[in-house]
Length: 252
Image (cartoon, rainbow, N blue to C red; front, top):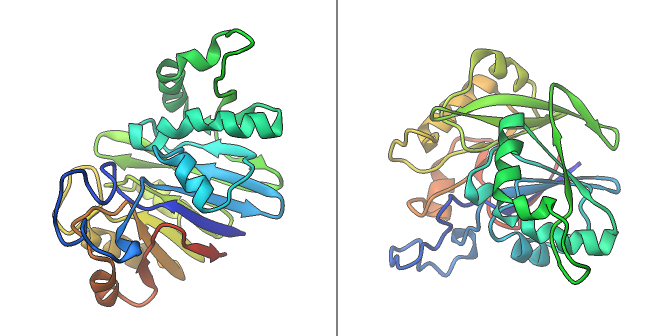
């Protein structure tokens, strides 16, 4: 299984419009972060987790040419606004793309992208996706996927586990029953926004503490704000933990 980080940034992206801080003006490409999303690929199967605002650009840079399914963690704009770009895959694949998520998430997607579910003229262009609510463990192309509930402030967000890999973004608390579902991992990707506390995200310190409890073999932090300089922060992280960056690929 291969995990490719299409984007690793927070909802503002990095650089932030109008900001002249040292990270936003850095010439290190690892400090340039589009909104967070990943591709999980196994043999011929290619699964997108979250459709970030820059999905078109991310797919071009990472040579993503097909999508078999999309998994959504939640319905915040930075994680779903790229759904319109599914129409390019629809055209090439000549088929609808299944979009999975919690019932609450998909209800919001139906409202946000209502035009995608209406009939249009033959000259119209719209994304074609089938909303598929998840209710427990499911299977895609032979891969067992375990949805894991975590908290993003007061909102419930869906993390996903694929065998020995789990993706946990936009999280400020993990319930105990969900903790058990995230143990025994070879690779964990988890939200680590910045050093300053935030009510809806783990700080770097909180994420490190969570890693010490879950004990994965390897961890990458994602959903990173412009407060965090890549190289300096990497040098301070414990063994087995690194910051992810846009374009990084990891074999699990």
